[in-house]
Image (cartoon, rainbow, N blue to C red; front, side, top):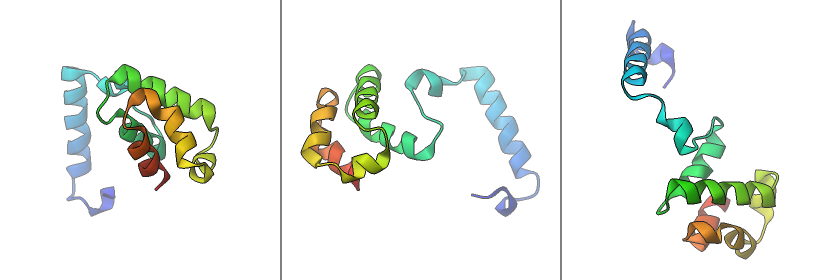
Length: 100
């Protein structure tokens, strides 16, 4: 949602709420391995499905080591991607989802 489509003052209020929540709870995104890039984050979320944070992180590292670009992932064989994702479980489902 663009800030211009919010009610006057809403963006500032949301920023204040964000600061209050950060003071109260910290920023667990960093400890969970969240990514700054939206595509990276989307793929990380797929990898984290039905696995723990440590395995999701390892699977992420394995994927990035095996494929230097998302374009390379897009053009790879599903079986090849699945082999890289094996440690995280549900590797064929995740490989197909990531390619799509």
